Length: 328
Ligand code: DGY
Figure 1 (tube, protein in one colour):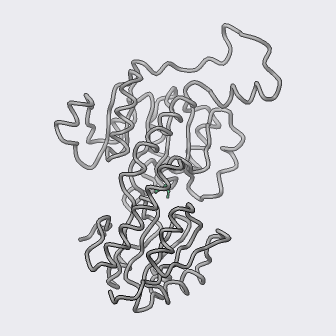
Figure 2 (figure 1 turned 60 degrees about the horizontal axis):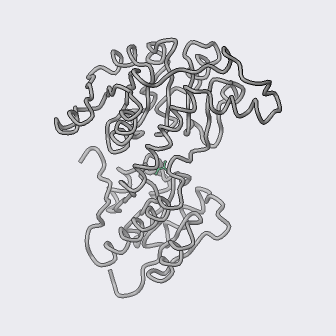
Figure 3 (figure 1 turned 90 degrees about the vertical axis):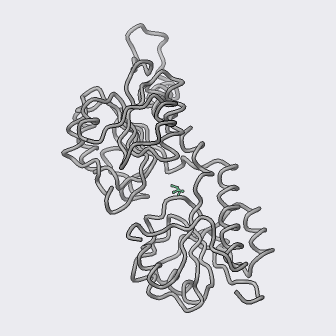
């Protein structure tokens, strides 16, 4: 990298402190009105930037990436999931892609635990009754939920967030089960007293609560397909703070509507920002607007990671949080 400051185009409004640091270090072009960029605007930005600082709302498919100019060397994503970026297309053009792993693990696990509690204990349903002025006093048989202690939690994807969730869940007395491409190390498995299921089908059929914590890749698209969802027990709850595309949302909405499973806590949706209209009408769901990493602390740390990745590249080194395409 030459001694000039790199041109960094930032596609969304980031926390003030992060933007200020970017202006200090880079020739940063900020998105002050925070409107997501159109594919044309993204392509134009790719054509004239050294670095594009992206978020999940930017769809960088092969067509868009093919319009990158010769200067473009780094796509520094503000977020851990990179399923909106065609990694192979970037790689074939010699463009690094980085993300922000680690810093959102704990907050995402907190909110996942929150969704487990909120869905099994009907927290949102109860709050809505109260706010509608319909609370008629304590009732021995009303607003009954399900106890967590002693139940089985099946975690789909035992990476950082899955493990952080497992630690919390154990404190609530849940038994930890998981499905992953491979078992976690014996140290972690012993710490969590976790049971590994090589077969996702077999695990799903035996869990009281299922939490989706794996990344969205071509291999995990509709991993929880209509067929697999039908394996769940009628009293089971499902929680997703990973990516909507991992669950067949239409099939899930149908099952929830017919009370074929007990409930769901969803922070992510298959066609964000749209949400299946059936889900919006149901009482047995807790729906959140993709906010599991939304704390001031995490968003600042995500910004720090973006800055470090750009800075390291600018200094002539490989950025620390490179995402390597799976085929490599
Ligand atoms: C992430 O970091 O992947 C969050 O879901 C926001 O994009």
